[in-house]
View (tube, one colour):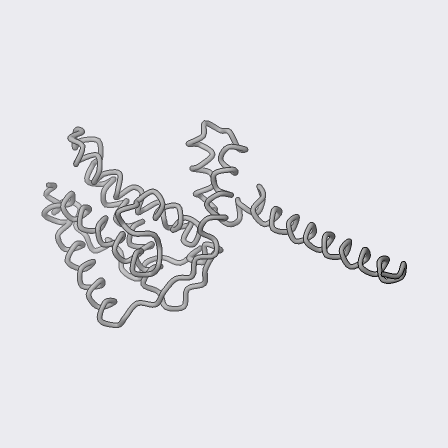
Length: 214
């Protein structure tokens, strides 16, 4: 092999290595501190708080979520399934007036099923499913967390007074925003594209004095 050919090969290899390094740096920057703040919004602050203010630990966790679930592509819902999910939400919302806790149980299960149908991890793996949802629906995923927390607290036998009816109503409002995000057909992926969008239906029509509790 001539010296000229060897030099050309070396130049090519160096170019490939440099390009790979540039891509790695660009990818790292996309999930760095400022990138994570933009991507996760309020969820970024909640994660930092959960790590007792340790920003590096929080960003490490969020970065891992992006690496694990960032490439997920949401699957479309069949029209019949969409109608069924919408009917179930309407029933759960109506039930809230007489039995808010049972309503939250129904919504918790419904959100898990809809997320699974859209291609997120199965509802039986709540933590993994939540992490994936937080990558693609960062602004509204907290409603799912709040609803799930009330449901699991009750299932574990903790005092039901930990969540007031008003707190449950607020959680349901947040959960509705996530539900609408998941039901939306013109949904992008990977950037928390539900940002700024609110649910088409709210609990504003609820008469708070009419809520009886569970």
